[in-house]
Length: 480
Image 1 (cartoon, helix red, strand yellow):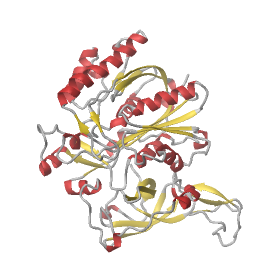
Image 2 (cartoon, helix red, strand yellow; image 1 turned 90 degrees about the horizontal axis):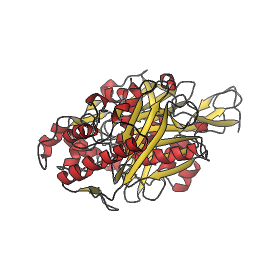
Image 3 (tube, one colour; image 1 turned 90 degrees about the vertical axis):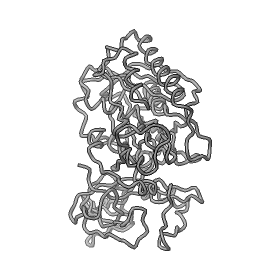
């Protein structure tokens, strides 16, 4: 039976405490609830986090087998240019992959899962990757600034090696106007909390879950874990009571540790539940946003064979507190930084060149000599090995999944950087190959020659005048 065959997640390194925000700008309303939220670095966005989650999900899996990639979000970088296609290119998936964007609602993640399941169950696709990611920006001083966190989840759906079968679903759809954002607007609008809480979360989520229980003749006690989002911690518990669920059954919402992650939230909670699941467990996950999707999974014996994943646990443990609210504003481009003459933007890569060099730029593919096996980056026609020198005997070689050793590095206080100093260095890859990359998610005093690094997909620049998001790969210390 079709279901989940692998899972992954990504949470940014930085966390900002709610009180750090409150002490800087106050809060429109009551005091913020205790806790912190995950904050995307200045070079991260919705797509880069989705790629990070997908790489975690694909650990040990042949990418050539993936024939579908669906992407759910409310914060897509491009309105006209398929965002899922960029993710597929960064993952170096095959050209015959089917890609689709699911946008416009925070239930887009579960909608993408249901569509992927239909494609797999119907035999149209064999292995479909679903990524859900959000990086929402709240208006300074508003409640969303405290509540919205950043993160991503990825699920692989297929028929072979299933760790959790999708046994059923139930959906409801309403044009519920809790939050909205018109085309071209930067910040969301929200209606009053009491209406969102009482007419939204408190009624729509129970309706979807109760509908699923009635459809399959189940009770809430039949589930080991029940996961659903809610912006209001007290109401989150009240929904469980209304459903008759024991507190031990309710999956932690991560509202106080990561924040409300929008379309990625339900899938991140599902990943957290799978990390603790045992064979035979039933998991119910519901989304919220213009209605709700309730999905019912049953864990199989294959759950014990899932390879090493960072998932939620390891991502939560890998963090650094962002103590400067001003730095947070700079990351979000809410307080534009003076970059000096060295930071003057140059012309972005021509789109025609980007398309021709997509495997190098987006997938980080170099070349490997067919004659002697020497890899090198970027792609070259001539083998770099002196005693070989083969010409036009190369094949593409993917470096994105390779770890490396930092051979040398520089901390540059003169180079333009939103988070100075700019750090870059030369990386020697495992298995061969050497090239220079920017370093990210690290502090200069923690960088050492010989340290282990891994590659991470990041936003290289944002050309607002031309509407171009430029992406490339950077090196980062291995997340342990």
